Length: 172
Image (tube, rainbow, N blue to C red; front, top):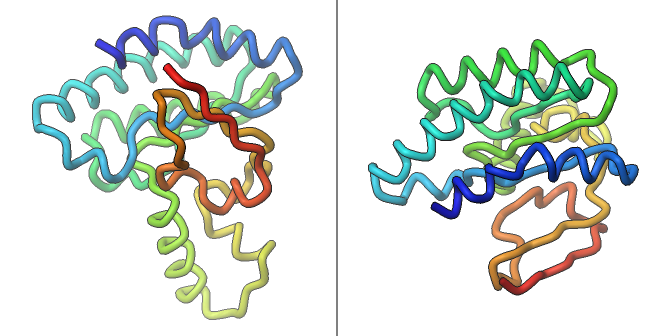
């Protein structure tokens, strides 16, 4: 129920932020650790994400928004992974702001995958070139992370991009 309630006002929330000058907003919708939840809950969430991403294509066109999905797609249901690809492709040239979904995402996992990609590349890297191997490489550093739900932790979220971010923890 909480996921459905959160999604119900998603487009209004995105529009509100962009009207106030925010250029990129990232939502942590499913962590790589969330696979430990019950099969029923995971299946429900995967179906919910598919339905909502499909709906977001219309929003992307109407509002000229670019959508990105970060995280590993290897465990996602095929139709959801394909929907992520389609949403990114169809909104890639939009310039009204960027909406990022962290789906099957974990900050440590992103860094490990980037390290392995850099090793495969076979050339030394510096901070800037290393970022090109990351899911978030083309995204700006995070200025502000807002965390709700009475949690005072970052929960493996955007570890590299949060290096100099302001953190705001909001109680329920």
